[in-house]
Length: 278
Image 1 (tube, rainbow, N blue to C red):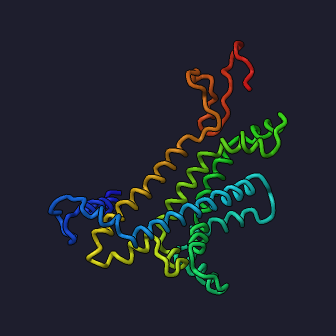
Image 2: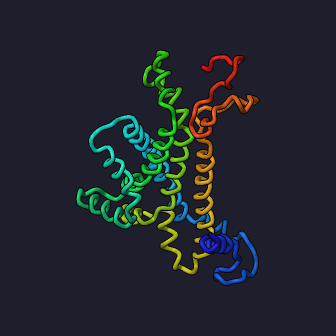
Image 3: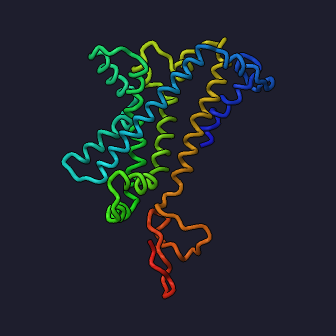
């Protein structure tokens, strides 16, 4: 782990290098490159393009990934396992293969390379993260809760809104955060679907060999690392607690069943003085 993360730390330190020559040890620490980087119009345009593509691709992934997870979890039909395989393939295959396939499809159909083609390329692998998160959460939840909601008179939309959605909310948000992190720093698939446009990773790759702009590249890389780490850390925190129902604050530990931490339903403690649980 030290071997993997030590070079990343060095790159982050180079963002504060007062010289435009990368040498070690640093002659000092300075933030003078931050201002010039922020006022770089080309960089800001690339940043805005990456943010737009990431947000829209994440929104599409959250909708389609959730729908696919519900379909695979609730229904038994011919080709069910094949659908799961097809959903995972875009992230399992090397990115260059996915990028070449998308590029061929776009060119064959005469579609112009634009923000739309970038979004389509990113959505293909962003769907997988949402699908896996939501499907895993659905498998850990109790179907009896939704059945009880319908028995009490709720229709399908009310059951989804008041029972199902709260149970999968953290998994859905965590999948969306991971999808945005993947989309924001994706370069391989983007290279084949962006055409002449520059997302932030493409801008970094294009200017890393230019010595005059290398200090600005280091600053951008610092912020890309931070923007990528924050969603992943939040996603990990959100998925840490996978319980469906939580024990009320102040309630004795014996009032929760042993399986409640792993998706079980809290129940009353045994004994003559207990009252029926709702």
